[in-house]
Image (tube, rainbow, N blue to C red; front, top):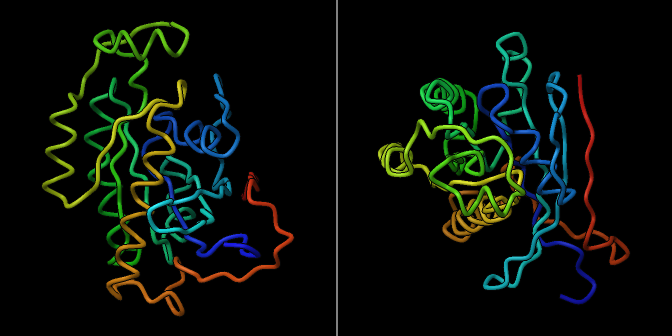
Length: 224
């Protein structure tokens, strides 16, 4: 891979209700830190991360758009669905309502995004659950909450809808990179099968940047 900074650029969107931890997942991915009290996302925030998929011998640049979870910004965030190759559909495992609402978010994604988009359902905040004592301890303690969505329930619904699935903690970092890597592997598999045309699909781009681009590049910004 000498002289190659990255092989593909993949566009991801992160969607779901407000306060499920979308911004915290993005910050954990790009900055390896936790936002204890993040400000509500107004419109869209952007982050970039380079990841390596060893078995593919590929370096992939993820361009991630964190969309606002409030209804007032829904028309704005829908425009970011277009051209996305991957989507993190996020709910809070301690909030059944956020899990119920992912059905509406998934409908939005399917109406406005590429039909071949790879979607992974992410149950966030497992560190808060009383029955996840190990995860909570690893995350440094903090208030416990009752789990309202079981792992089995989330996994079953994801299977029924043809989604990938993982539970994660933006606080501890558990399974955050794994969620993006899992979706990335699925997208690359689709590229190999010709589902995504890497020359014409907006969410998947072959990239041949100069060798001077650093491999640990992380970027965050905001829009609106």
